[in-house]
Amino acid sequence: MNMNLANFSGKGIAHFSFIGMWMLFFIFFLFPGAASGRMYIDVNAPSIRKFSIAIPDFKDLGVDKKHSELSKKMPGVISNDLDLSGYFNPMDKQAFLDEKGGGLTSEKINFKDWSVIGAELLLTGGYTCIGSRLEVEVRLFDVFWGRQIIGQRALGDISSYRHLMHRVSNQIILKLTGHNGISLTKLAFVGDATGHREIYVCDYDGYNVRPITRDKSIAILPRWSPDGKKIVYNSYKHGGPMLYLKNIASGAVRRLSGRSGLNIGASWAPNGREIALTMSHRGNPDIFTIDLKGKILKQLVKHWGIDVSPAFSPNGDKIAFVSNRSGSPQIYIMDIVSGNVERLTYEGRYNTSPSWSSRDQIAFASMKEGRFDICTMDAAGGRLRRLTENEGNNEDPCWSPDGRYMMFSSNRDGRYHIYIMNANGQNQMRITPRKGNQTAPSWAPE
Image (cartoon, rainbow, N blue to C red; front, side, top):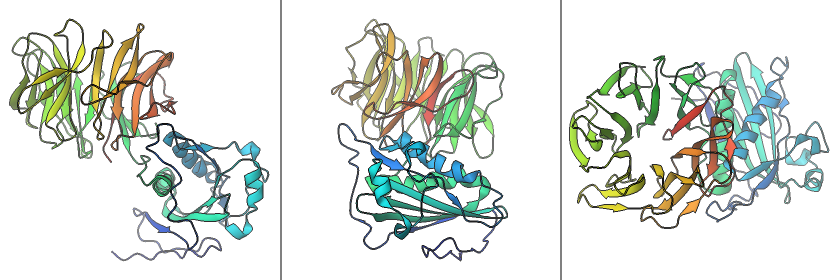
């Protein structure tokens, strides 16, 4: 498909051709002398120092000024994305010496004004609205050197401004860390604001929430498929906890497992063709795998104890799960081929909800001093770390696709809400401001 791209001249925003109302696209430019080989942030460091970034309001460069609200909304999206990343400290605008933000390009910026207030990075932006279309030009500068690091233009519908700004955020994070950002990922969770527990989907930052169930019953434990196109969940709408599969694009729902007793705690195999879950149709709650038609493929775990909450390893050859076979709920690991089972957790009298990351770390909820906290360990049970402490109950950990972040539910503010943090426990921030409780997050793949 041919696309007429706007010219990035550094002298403002040029008019652009309309390629179709549905289309949005990006141009990404690196300029000579922009320190293009320089990495600012070591994301693998034990403790990450945040870089102070100033983000003034964007300048409305259009003629009619019909969408002046975007001058604050668009930089607000980027500021929140960078804040949630844990790598940046967006500065308070009241500290800015130039309340209008100064110029957009390096020759019009007084970098000393930004340096004196402690800014290390500066992001400037301008935009033009033509009808329903939006063009945004963004530049990122190293304040110390007075050099441009990134120049980027985004084109799309005005209604898609949040999506466009998420893409800008991802490019900033990619440039300064060498790793993709998470700003375009999705989240599923359980919410009870309607008086019923339903499954909802939203952007990773808690915006654009929409329900995907309206069972007016109890729907729990959503889990995204590896391709991000489907979600399995449990619902009590027809009695006991049955397992359902929903196609996100079409909205089609079908029952995967409605056997007598339990059909709970589903976990997708990495190949996307198998699902592990706990079923009790034979009497004892044990872990089985089924295909996407609901046919039983294999009984993975068979024991007199209660075995629940399976979580596949990144390559699918092992599962972590919870069992009370030792007298209290603890986390075990099973080699699927050999059937060998080993106990992983020995600290704490109640360990549950294992979640296995793409970086081969296992997160889980552990009862400490009468409260649940989020902990992590490696796949051998070593390198145990406690990530939350003295902040209410913290449960339901789930990893970002890249394994560098974690979502979890916490009642530290009274009700349960969803929080995000870096994999090392830093930068814990609430993302769901909704009424009621939000629990059981599941992070969609990229």
